[in-house]
Length: 159
Image 1 (cartoon, rainbow, N blue to C red):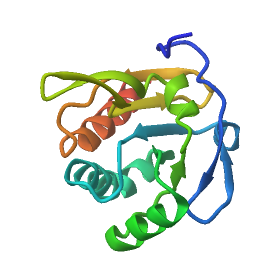
Image 2: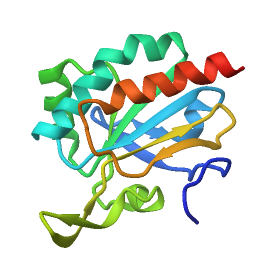
Image 3: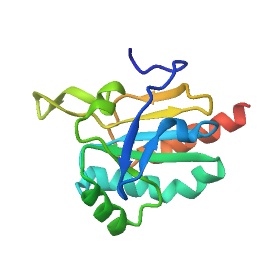
Image 4: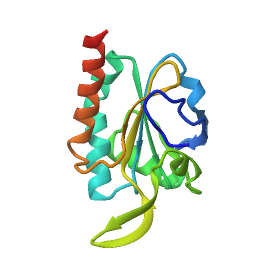
């Protein structure tokens, strides 16, 4: 079933960098920003992670949780978190099952060639566990976190 606004977000259980199990239901009652990215310590992924780090305090004021998900290992995530002082958890999806459920893994075009890989995308899950917004393909990783924050802030104004 495709990830669409208004539908229940797919459940998941993944390990974080410290080996703790994290599931979506742990955050019921809060807005959750799930951002999917290809690889730790690559230029675009670093810009995106640091962008979420830089708006993290504003997201916390909005009581939103940020979770980064990639196929990387716990040790890779630990190094990435430490190196860039990331204040939010990074989750490991080595078999890409969660990414596949969320439409963040599949066929994509890279340099004109179709390949299978991680599709940089973000899903905003509302406090009720339903998808509020799905950014299916993030083109500008550095600018994206600010756009997510703007959407959260706009949501507050609309209430």
